[in-house]
Each structure stands twice: as C-alpha cells, then as structure tokens.
Length: 288
Image (cartoon, rainbow, N blue to C red):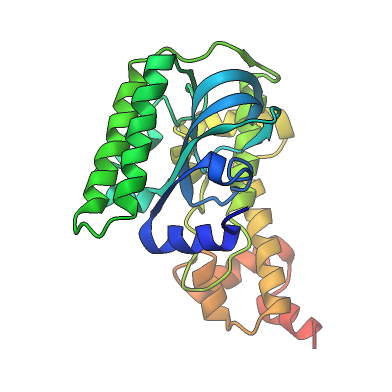
C-alpha cells in the first residue's frame, strides 16, 4: 500500500478533500469509516456494498455515494479492481456555499439512490473528471479548491440525470432501517475527544435533521422498534460518555458540560443527577 490511513486523514483534515486512484492503493475502498467525510467512488470490478440495511452486488462500473451519517461497508470480490475516489468534508463544500446539495440530494440521503450503474461512455467521461481533480490536487494553482468544488458539482449533476440501480435487497422494514441508521449515527458521535470539539447532535430533532426525516417520524420508528424513545437513547449514551470522561480524564466539570453540549455546568449537573441519581463530582471521587 503506497500511503497510510494516517497520511490520508492528515491530508483530509488540512485540505477538506482528497482524491486518489484506487488501483494505486488497493485497500482505499475499504479503509474509511471516519464520520467527517462524504465519499464519491467510481469503480470497475466485482464488489458487494452494504448500505444501512440494504446490500448491493455490483459487477462492472458503478458510481457510489457515501454519506458519513449513514453506515456502509464495502467488500471487494474481484482480483482486479480499479477506479477513483474523492473524499470531502461538508465544510469544504460550505466554503463554496453548496452544502444544500448534500443532505437533500437523493444521491446522499437515507432511502435515496447511492449507487448508479455506469455505461462505458459515462465511465470514460467520469474518469476524465477524476483525473483532472487529481491533477489540480497536485498543482499549485491558487484557486484549485474552487475547481475541485466545481468538479464535484459536475459529478453530482451528471449523476442526477442517471437512473439508480434497482439491484438492492431490502432486509428490514422502513422503521427498522431508520432505527438502525439512527443508532449507528448516535454511536458515531462518540467518543468525545476534546472540549474544543463539543457534541453537535444533542436532541432527537438534531438527529432527524441529519437523517432528513421529520422528528415525529424518527420518534415513532425508534419507539416501535426498540420500545424506548429517541431521547432516552440519546440521554443514556451521553450519560455513559460523561461517566467515561469523569473516570478517565482530568477535564473539569465545566469542560465536560461544554463537550457534551450543555450551555452551563448547572444544566449538566441537573441532567446527570436526574439520569443517575448522583452528581458528576461523586462519580469522579469514586475513581480516587
């Protein structure tokens, strides 16, 4: 493997995007589970893609759209596997005032159309677009970020003209699928690594907005499948994270409160005591 996962993550943090040729890095298709980045992947070969609760068997050329809010995994089944991948952050596109195309796009939203079958002429066209992005990424051109955004836009608009693949296998009901994705998204918010990067999704509405569904629809689905409310799942996960931070870090209560999305330490103290029957400071004293 020519480059390490650490190298890719570092470059992504610095630039907000990274584009590369898959045949130069055979594991590139499988290595990304990082929640910060969207993914567009043009591949030729045999593979099996698991997207939320659905699976897709691909043979030939496909275009795949990965959303950091929706769990997916990728199995490469053929010995020869080629193509291109671009990973980019939402912040990178926000800089170009284009972020609305992400969550609302049928290419990225849950229940949308993340996989497109690509003809040979379309493959040649898209190959050229990816090659141009790689060239720009390696250049010193002052406005190359704008060019990369334009190329991403071009891929998205060309893709919206195409029909999605119909070869998905639906494994669960709509409520089960939504609940699966909600629980995966909830877990992806943790661990909270620094007070400087506080929890961004704190309420049922926050999660519903990220999943592009109405909060009432999310609440009904989660309650139907698990027997517990969305807010209960969120609160219990925040409490578990608070206990871990209290026991394994030296962050003060104010830092912990802010990191977990509370505006004031008193709000965090009241929340923690309501959920556990004890105070945060008491949990911290237990480890001494």
